[in-house]
Image (cartoon, rainbow, N blue to C red):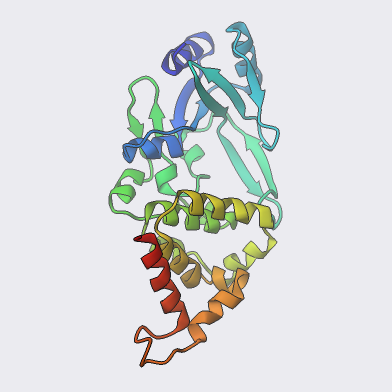
Length: 264
């Protein structure tokens, strides 16, 4: 069974409408193959989806780490994840401190507002392959800009600043719209993040990225470097002899070293 046929059968059986969303749609714009296919299903309750999967003899697994229902299924050698439209209501400082409200009958626009960046907020129809771009994500990709979808929802999750780091490292995005939201209060909220969650974002950027000068510059300009890596931040206060280092301070020298390393 192809994924597109699965989507049609789902709609015919229980009226649900399945869309690709997030990174796999972004990869379509980049003309890249995507290994992860994330989907959202609209117009269907979780129990209805389970009944449909059982009626089609499709095995599924639940994501044990998710605070909301996410179903992993295998279709024609492709693994897809199916989630539901939801609202995330912040309840505390941590990345996990959210109250989740599933609402399968939200509009696409309302559902997309909770997403982090416009490049990750596009949907793709299984019916027509049409990309539904409600926040000008395609244009931002074309213009090489990383832009938050919604200022209010963006600052509710401080981990998104480290997601910005890994997207800048991977794609070389310009990041001025993200810097505009980097208030002292918001950056300080990142102190409450677990080291593990920060490391995972760094790992993605390091393993898959190549624009490290730009990504490190974002850490510096956003003041994340000062909060989390103060010793590195102080490199800009360490002046060098102009006779041997016309570039200036040690931070600039380090950026030149990183740039030279990436161009080897």
